[in-house]
Image 1 (cartoon, rainbow, N blue to C red):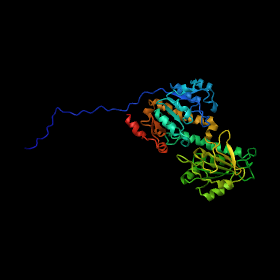
Image 2: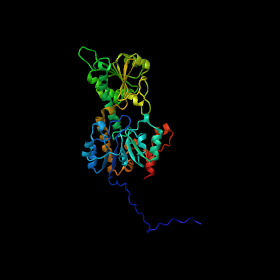
Image 3: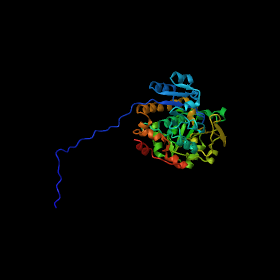
Image 4: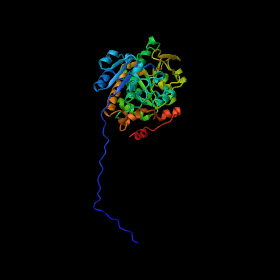
Length: 404
């Protein structure tokens, strides 16, 4: 039997389906809490009074714990005049759905943190605690780290600003401790007519190293920069716009330069964990009496073998007659400038989040904010932390896709 031919009916017609668009939701009002920091010698605050005023004028609510801005020389009055609510009960500040901290959540904060809260704070990989991460996961917190937040240019704006502050502070600190009154060598950091210039060795050609080098050159010092990344050394030369003595980190050359320098700056960094130790104890022992070491990488373990953690209250110690300055979080010593830098980034980001209808909406298409998220509604989305503490890792992109 022959196969029947298909019949095409004239009554059958195709219709196009209505196009569905991803409609932008209405803006949402945020309630933001800013507690006073109690750990890590933290003096900074996440939003300046001016930034708070902008957020208030955009319809948001900001609750500031009393004296939270004291370390940055911002009074409660400055915040209340900007429209913020001043709160004297720490627990009430933590009830805000969005929390802004300039130090990572610590043990004392954990019982106050709310279910499903959004927290903006640094992460401090070297000071991470497994119990803290597990408690945040249990409370289904969404946590965004300062260190990993990107901007539209693909850089890390808060990290860069803090590095610029640290780099700028380095030569001010060095000049202070070279003074005879601080048991230093008694030399002026810079160049005086008829006197050989002060010698400065900078180890690390990142942002901290670059700014420190720029400031040292401006003072008239003789600067020598070491880094194992040749392209970074080239970039430093290009950014400074002038030739600078540079070298890869070769132990014999480094030891020779350290032996005759007045100031040595450790500014090596890697993405996670400890900074590489490149200056041995023997190299430090051969340095001149009264010379100064400033180990900016101390919050990642330091890159001098003789480095030991110090504090803003007791910033220096001597070993082999060499003054060691090993204070972590140098920007906290220049808290007002640092607070303004952080505030510039967070204010713009919070307004963006509000305009897009909330964090859940903006991360759907804003990959820069995704970079900063290490916890999303309790799921750990940072691979490094999951490996370090043997905790379950979940891909953030999959989490977001599953919720659409």
